[in-house]
Length: 108
Image 1 (tube, rainbow, N blue to C red):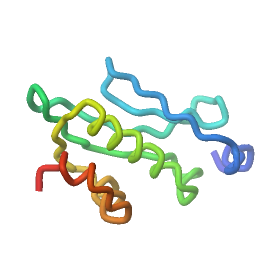
Image 2: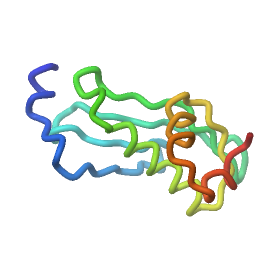
Image 3: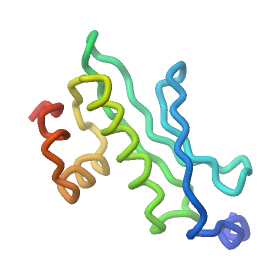
Image 4: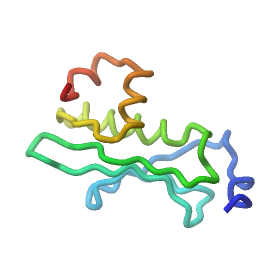
């Protein structure tokens, strides 16, 4: 897997895909089978739980999870949802990126 990390160009544009059916945000790494994901579940009609973010070990520390977190929080805002932040990384992201529109959509 370390070899795959060397092929990943950190300067390339990172594209986040939203798979609504599987309730996840995905970044495909190197166009390969490696993927970074953020999982969520609906826990009410207009409420989601942002549950878990995972980036393969070989790709950690490159800011990839930040793109997943931003996409998830933007989704919450755009869809006018409320969010539970179960995932520690999303909690960290919101704290480090204190956007007023995010706070209006988070269960404290």
